[in-house]
Amino acid sequence: MKPRKNARRERGNERGGSYGKPARSGGRNGSSRGDSSRGGSYGSIDRGKPRRTNVKHSSKGKERELDGTQVEGRQAVREMLIAQKRRVFEVYIADDIENVAIVDDIIALAADQRVPLHRVARKDIERMARSEAPQGVIAKGAELPEADLGDFLREMGEKPFIVAIDGVTDPGNLGAILRSCDGAGVTGVLLPKHRAVHITPTAAKSAAGAAEYVPIALVSGLPTALRQLKEAGVWIVGLHDAADKSVWELGSLATEPICLVLGAEGPGLSRLVRERCDVLLSIPMRGALSSLNVSAAAALATYEVVRARRSTT
Image (cartoon, rainbow, N blue to C red; front, side):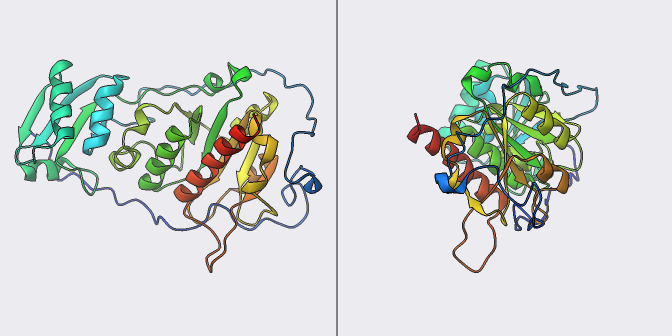
């Protein structure tokens, strides 16, 4: 099979920008629901008994939704083969690639799973590539399977930890967020079906294999999905750089079913998404800049939930 020519490379959008715009003063979004005198502990707040609701599942049409059909980079391809969550159609390796352990792993895994492996010229790899640095390895496979929103709620006794991503458009940022989510043991990730990046080759490479393991649900409208989570007993916590409380004040709220919401590069959380949040928290900034890159903020905040859960159990 000849590699296709003239493939466009992904450039992605600007990776800088904030994870939240300044909030309007007053109203539900201008203050959190916790008692500041309790040192950030939200455990005493009574939202009533959680009730089960009919959760809308992701639609699975014939068109590509989550994608992930082309994976580039050595770590991402190796994890794709190890995970065995979907069929791998073929693997391409540059014929001048250096003899290192990770490449030997890919070759052995492909042989063990009877995946066709093609040795091609480096220039052919570069023509096929849709990321900046495929590292001489590309795999093609079935689309990543989508999770349902209901999958994240079926075992509420395990106190799910969900991450919702509000319109991130840079594939490198999405991949880095997924890598942090995998490391922090996140139950699943919510992605908007529209106006947001999905699992492109650049996102898969940046995720370094995490896209194979973190369940991802596509939702038609993130505000609606957040409302459904709230009705099921999940606390909605938005990262917002103008919030009065910081992530260090998460306290016992981390021990509850929780959904951490991350905003897009630049604009941050959309108005409707902010209105669905129970609590808005910021990451303290001690320098001249007002916020972190969204993927850096995701890493810090997800591990703060992990730390808070360990310290309160």
